[in-house]
Length: 347
Image (cartoon, rainbow, N blue to C red):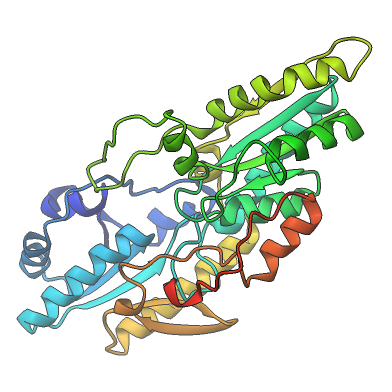
């Protein structure tokens, strides 16, 4: 058994493959991040399959998120086209929880727990200053599950912003009035913000930069966190200054835990889930299955064909998912909802 380092580019350098015996992997569960490493780009499907044949590999276990799943699907298709006896199995490992059909992915619960710690820090800092606003930006390019779950779990958030819901600043139903009311009432407020939220608003207000993509084709996001703090301070300073005898303006306490969510060791729930995923993946591959992803679907452990989840993304269904309704209720924030039914448009 070998571990391939540095993502898909590592297939092309078999001399760097790492033997993974029991002694080598016994402490993997105590380490965060990716022990084998990862990378952007480097996916050459035909060259990868050529290497698998040359090295005599007949069981391939691919571990990762939506981009990794897309790559695994291409490998499985190429293997099938050549009629090769190679089984391709995928283990869903991503903190974003953005693989469709599955109840959750390995790493998600750990990331939510780490995000909650960051939110608690922002809340403590906000409580220490008059008219303070704690802002926490968490990972979530296209899916706001970390922000949604951590905002609910911390019980101190006054506003949760996710990529799936557009928001606006001013006027009735805007976030400025909502935050002003919370700060006047509690002398502080806390925002939980997914990194992919507000991208359209930044573009509309002329704050977006040039479109730049990484090696895997992902569009690099504009940094919503500092920009949001500046915009809110501009809008709230005068109003808050007039509302207090001391003339206090808005104090922003910005926390960006970033890779601290992804680099921490897995918690107990994720460790247990990882064991289940690993056992099921091995059993499926040894039984002759291929081109599948393992995971929990409606609490049942399943083998799901890769083509059902590749090139698709799991996002919050804000119109019908009760958990988002809980967020709106718990924070008291504007719903920013329309009456359109968009379920048919979702993956």
